[in-house]
Image (cartoon, rainbow, N blue to C red; front, side):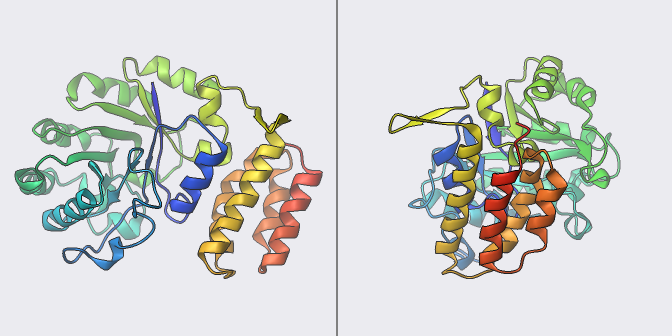
Length: 322
């Protein structure tokens, strides 16, 4: 059974992934937030720490692209291969209207002919680079994937990650686990389930429902509870460092501080790091009993010192629910 962490723009960047791996276990594979605008070979927007192999573990990281242009995907694959990566992932799942309305992300799903033509060009020249896809059931309708599956089956996808919602839902309602289950016999590629895994209990129910699928992508549930992958795999949520047992509260506290300080170093001390820390806290607040109180403290801050004081206050006076 393998667990991966899905990509989140503005949150799961290289500093996040590196600090997360220092503090928590259970995740076998990470994905970069999507790249786009690869206009030429050796594009400058790929010459960044986010994808630099000296700043990332290429064995556990798959770069993701958002595109409808076969040539752009191939340029991306070429540069990733030169950096030592063996797989790229195509984002056909992003549900946000500013993306989907341009027939990108899950906005591609209503256009199977367009997808087929793009895949034909990509697989003619991608050589030995693995190519995977992350998608939803559709943009307007959960039946749109029925016309896309035969296209996926024509090509040797390294994996197909399905989030069983439609794009128009965004993240509202529940993931349609039964719909995902019904699709399993018709898909050739190795399948990965993604959606609404927020606890050990929800994981157990979903895993039972989608057998024999044994690969799962975690998302919002892991951002809210960084221990989730460890708990799913049955790991002890206490660690020993220098013969001192550190409990969950202390582990989470150290993680939040280390991530903030690492982001601060990368940003040269700029307060712009607060935006990314707030993005994380919009999920992490759910780890605390008084979640809304924790969020109010973080949401209103505008200065680094205020943020540091708010974090210390949250951990001092607010108990974990984990």
